[in-house]
Length: 265
Image 1 (cartoon, rainbow, N blue to C red):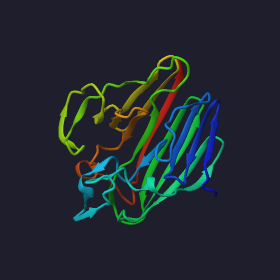
Image 2: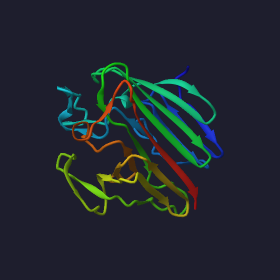
Image 3: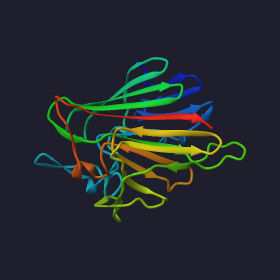
């Protein structure tokens, strides 16, 4: 099938998926208003087979120490599949299924599948990682760039509301130290724990409320940039390949889902 941009529609919601650009969701328009920051590196990209930074690009894989390219020196960041082209498995009016092969520099062959499903009031992203061969540690996450301001007369910047159980202490190297404390006010480039599942509400006053939800317990919030804010559900914290690995086995793939649901104000 063609791997050009895919457009999904449901009611007045429209999503653009770019298999050829790292499998990212390029845009989400609700009533013609674009919710995601535009640009080749923005939208919402998948973080696989790890999320955030891996310390020095190294992780323990059984008895072997693996070295990933240092694309955010001195660390490796955000996985490998956002840098390559995905293939389109199937599409319909409101759903797309795309796949990517795990390949060099990742040391194990495997496949990532992402299902993008649009409803009139929600977008659901489901991702799975399966191995063809040996077991390996992995993570799944998403990195959406939501526009801070949606534009229009009198438009106000977005407000973030969430109630995490803790905030991971961030070291000078941007990685969690292992210490936890009660959440502090932003701005943030930080990881939070939500044992009941990720539940973050973004409110553009007078315009729209959008909730980012996931059964996963970890979320990174990044709001230090003027143009956008990021709410990133993931299966473990940054450096999680070392501190909290999730194992992909031939019998048990790793799977995660996030749903963005919205309502007008």
